[in-house]
Amino acid sequence: MGDTRAASGTGQDPGLPPVITCGEPGSFARGVMAERHPALIGQVREAFPYGPRQHRALDALLHEIVHGVVEPLGPGSPDRDLWLARGREHFGRPWFDAPFLWAESYFYRRLLGAVGYFGEGPWQGIDPFASFKRAELRGDTVEEELRSLDDLAGVPSAERAAALLQASLWGNRADLGFSGPAGESVPGEAEPGLVADDSAALWSLLPPGSHATVAVIADNTGRELIPDLVLVDHLLERGHADRVVLHVKPGPYYVSDAMTADVVDCVRRLGRAPGEAGVIGGRVREAMATGRLDVRTHAFFCAPFPYERMPDDLREELGAATLTILKGDLNYRRLVGDRLWPATTPFADLTAYFPGAVAALRTLKSDVVVGLDPRTSERLERSGRAWRTSGTHALIQVRARPHGPTLSAPPRTG
Image (cartoon, rainbow, N blue to C red; front, side):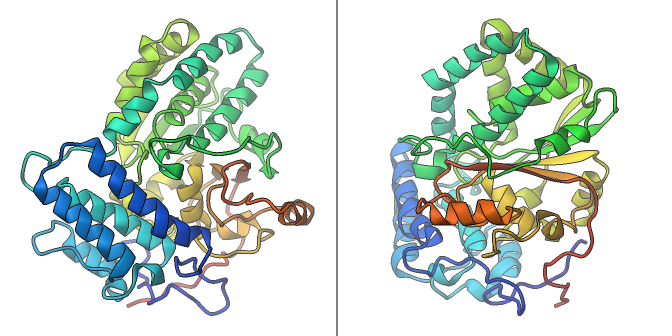
């Protein structure tokens, strides 16, 4: 099924830019592994009244990341063989040597294991990030954003569409894992201009009355998923789509990544709101009841691989959509490949493998970015700002149809 490539020890391939690892001192990836992940372990520890077993496991994971080497899942873990196949070459080596995408993904799997999410017992199935997510939904910022929907109720459809697309895009700034659940999600002010803006191409694929099916691969819940649902409602209500399939994670992944339970919480939050937000919430609920909005998930959404390696069943499903919209930074990294691409590398070339039309809506919170025109790239590089990683810049990129050969590595069997 799907791509049968075996990952190399470093994930490096001749002729391609290097895969991002956590080993470069001062790099964004190293900061995530050396600072953000240890801090998150402490925040998860404080969020729940875990017992001695969980505390010992969290201590061991923290020590392993900072001072030890990557250990495999223990005997009896339900997915031990799966993870051995996914990265056997990384076990026994420092965490900082592993590809960033793989290391992040495995860290969250290990964190879930440490708190007993998968094991038999009272903590089985308890999302360690649930309290962070629900606190955000109860916050004043969400309340203010829901009230602002009243201002859009009577505006012309095209203007409303543009505003809701922007809200969905910039909602990606609200990432509980960016600087920790206790603090502001993103420092600094958002830049009003996008580093790449293919929004016109996006809307051209979804003219009213086109009977389109749109797939939306969600990123974060809360302040991102709510504007995503509002945008979905607009697509359905104004005839840009007959059906939307919302893809979410099958379990907790990163901090604020959306699962089905989070969709339920967000739909309830919309429905309880007064004014236009409550009306939208009612329509979203009705769309789910009639199948016009279908929530789905797939195990691959928690895999440590680029979308080029998606299994055949997911490839077939996304290929049948008129347009697939991928939200957020992690989905972008998986879409184009988590490598140090030159910023001017064509987006269409790197997404040529994707089975249908694809759009990326993303605020920049990691080093990977492609598809910029040379003048924009030069201006940003000369600015002296951490524009790639600060969450202050954003993009909308679209590849409308298959476009020539991909620049990724050819398949290898093994």
